[in-house]
Image (cartoon, rainbow, N blue to C red; front, side, top):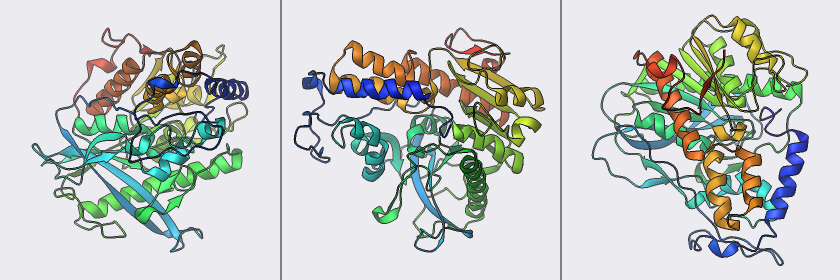
Length: 433
C-alpha cells in the first residue's frame, strides 16, 4: 500500500527469490569497467560484481537543461529530528537553460541517496554501489543561466519511500519542453541528502492506514509550502536557508499563474489532494497512484469522492488502477474519482507495464541487470517482475509525450490532438472509458 501496491505479498516473495537466483549467475564478465570514483564494497564470499551506470534518454525538447537545488525550512512545522527543530525539505529545480550555456553536468544521485535506494539489492547479496547512480549523469547543467521569459511551473511528488531523483527522466523532458519542474523530497519517507552531506533515511516498511493518512497530509502541506517559497522567489527573495546563489534569471522565470503538478504512485494521490486544497494548481496528473488509504479496504479519500473542477489525467499501468468492476485490478478510488470529476478528465492505460514503469526503474532494470548478470532467462524474468514486459524506450517515450501534451494543453493553452483519441504514434497507450 505504501507505494500503492508496488508488489503483492506473493509477487514480492517471487521477486526476492529471483534476485537471489541472479546472484548465482556466472555471467559477470560483461559488467562495466570499474569506476575509480566509486568503489564497490565487497565482503568475503560476495560475488565479483563491478559498478554499472545508468544512461538517461536524451530529452526531446528544444531547450538545454539547467538544474539547481533549494534547501527549504518550514518554520511553522516542527521536526524534533532536524537540527533547527523545524521541517526541512530538499527541492530540485529543472529548467530551460539559456542557449549556449555551459556548466558542469549534475550527477544522477548523491552517494548516500544512491546507497539507500539500492538497499534491497544489497540485502539480496549484491555489493553496495553495484548500481552506480552516484556516478551516472543527468542532462542538467548545474546552476547555469535560465532561458529568458516566463515559464510554466510543474511540481512533482515521488512515490512513498522513493527519492524525487527516481523520476529524473520525466523532469528533464518537461524542462526541455519549456517548463520549470520542481521536484520535492518528502523528508522521512524517501532518503534525502542535505547540504554538507547530512543524510536523512527514508522508510523501509509500508505504512498502515493512519500512517498513510498522515503521510498524504504531510505531503500536501509540503507542496503548499513549496508553492509559497516559489512565490517568495518570484518576488526577488532567496528562500534557500543557506542563501545558496541562485541561477541567473530564475527569479523572473517563474510563471506562477500557470502551475501544474504530477506525481508517481503516492505522489499521484498527493497531486490530487493538493489540488483539492490549493487552487493555485491548475492541472494535475496521477501516474499509477491509488486515491485511497488501503487498496482492499479503503477508506476512499475525500478527493476521490468529490473530484476536482480542474483538468486531471489518470495514467495507469497494466495491472493497476482499472475502473471496470469485474477486473481483478479494479480500483474503487479511481472509479469513484472518475464519476465525481467535474473538470476535464482522461484515463490512460499502458499495457505490459507495472507500477515501477512510471519511474526511472523502467530504465534501470533493463539497462543494468543484463550488464551485471548477462542476458539470461532469469534476468528477463526479474525485469518483467519489476517493470513488466513493455519495451522500456517506448514506455518512457509514451509517458513523456502524454505528460507534455497534457501540460501543453492546460498550462500553455495549446490544444493537443494526442489527448483526443488513441494515436498510431503510441499504440502502447490505450484510452480507458
